[in-house]
Picture 1 (cartoon, helix red, strand yellow):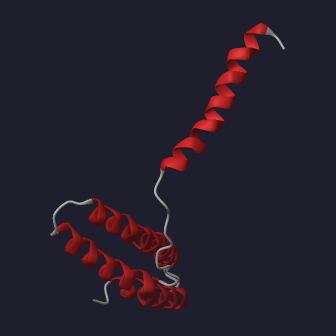
Picture 2: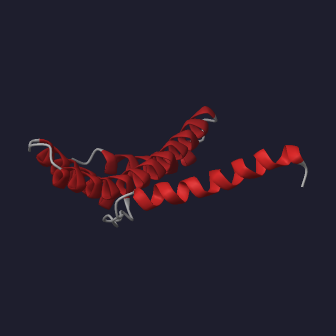
Length: 125
């Protein structure tokens, strides 16, 4: 091995080992409640936001921080689904927009209905 490659090899080995040591120091991970549909995601977001708010009214403690950590798994799952669904809603709106530019009344009605069906799930409450 060439002398000038040793520092590079050492840096590579350390960069691979560091994430493993950091991961070993992290607390156990939990499985949150998964959101599979937009409706579930919105329900989980509302109920777990409420739970988070309740924990925040309590004194700071390791137990409360651990509870918050657990809650974030469900909240992250909910937001991932909402993000995906919002992108789908935006795509439906764009299809509606383009159809309206072409004055295609049949497609406008179809796309408007598809858009409204999905977007109204976001504002149902």
